[in-house]
Image (cartoon, rainbow, N blue to C red):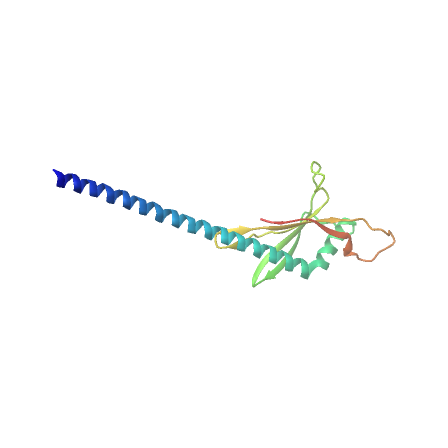
Length: 158
């Protein structure tokens, strides 16, 4: 009788130990995949920010010209202006559009520049946007192209 009780007791203890080990293993696996996902998201955001920075640095005159022509009424943007850009052998499309929100005065009239196709790293995706405000000319007789009239109001990557 004692031998049967000891063997049943031993089996129960071994079963509990195996369940504990299985639980710890699964938690570690979930934690590792969660950390990998966070790391990929951070990499995607960094890459999206880098793409946006290099695009704005290399195409600032072109972007300013498009925005100022639309703002001054010379050449209106129909819906969105598209610009093709290559970064590290990949093609990205940047869209420029004017925001018209009657109910949100803080962004009404701003220009939005964003990456149309999301930046992907592993399973994670990221977007980057810039909102630009245009200031009126100080001198109405000044016909010269002046990109100093533009200022970045909002910039975020998510």
